[in-house]
Image (cartoon, rainbow, N blue to C red; front, side, top):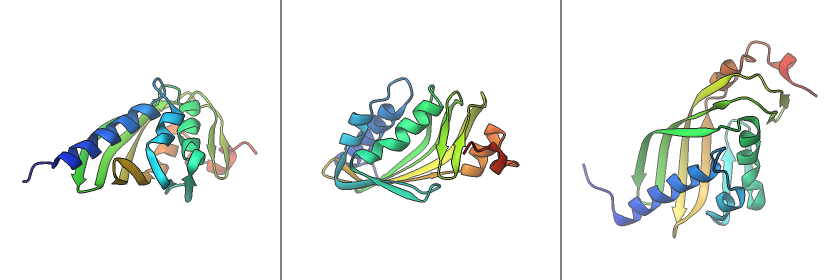
Length: 155
């Protein structure tokens, strides 16, 4: 097994910093957005939506508002050239409105530990793409709304 190059190690540190900026207790949305290069984007695969520019921070704010104690536990992190892949869990207590494409899930008071996989492409130390694959059915089940999803939304 080969060791990391200096660029791969730098990319790993960039991604670790990005996660810190998205945590509920250390959230810095402008700092999060600033880690993306020109034309860079965040793709929320579960929502089917790409965010550019200042919009990149929308999902960070949404999850931090819904889960004020939001934090990510990194399980595995892999680097290859300018690609970083992270297996992780999203963790927090649902204390605020969670905005989803079909409506809003009001606070349930339940904890989540939702599996997630993130794929990043970087160039010159900046993120050019971030694809986030959250296990949405598991997240919804942990919130207690999966079997009665439509009734759970506030319109």
